[in-house]
Image 1 (cartoon, rainbow, N blue to C red):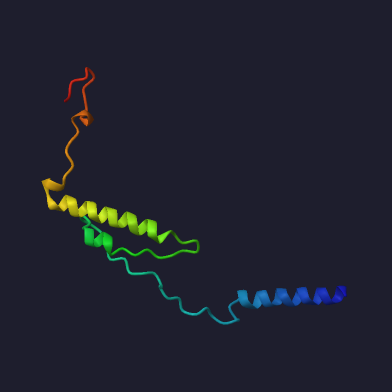
Image 2 (spheres, one colour; image 1 turned 90 degrees about the horizontal axis):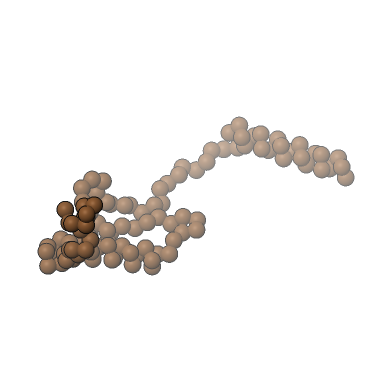
Length: 105
């Protein structure tokens, strides 16, 4: 029985050596299955850019509903900012930076 396992181990090691040397055939050509991300590399993003984003999935993935909700919220905020002053939030005077004596700068 010991001889049987010894021969089995030698054959397994030989198979690994053949595959490692490249004689077992080549790997199939890889293809890119990720979705196309069409976001401008430079410049500001528009709400349509954010709405068009699709992420590729990994082994453990992500919660698509959470990411989609965040992207929709961001796109809506970009739309509001692009609309102009009517959509801009009012400045909070208490949030202004102050000098050391407490007076606003």
